[in-house]
Length: 129
Image (cartoon, rainbow, N blue to C red; front, top):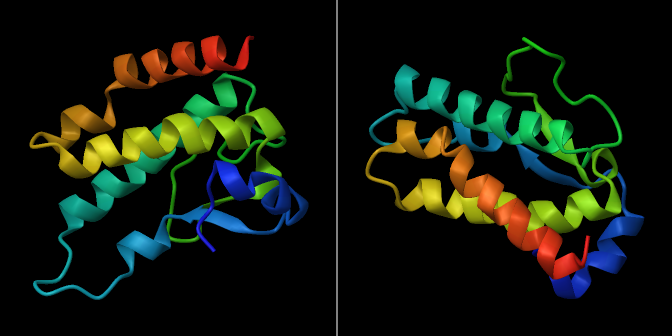
């Protein structure tokens, strides 16, 4: 089942459901093999996503401590996010990931906090916060 706004209420009940695990990307089989640079970029992007969620009060626990680096086991579960955090993940973080996937300059996209801040403002306006 793909996590989306139509089935969010059912998903909220399954707190252990993993919605993002960095190893899903960094450990996939690829031809040619994934480069060290590519894997490091994935770690940085995941860290930026987590830190953004944490800094904006969207998490129920500290997923990554300040200065802690992501690794293949780093993950975000439904229960790691507040209800509002899960909604924002679907609205904003997924849009950021999609933007990254299409970007020519992926290093720039990883650090495009202006984009995710704009998504946060849109989200708050939409949610009436």
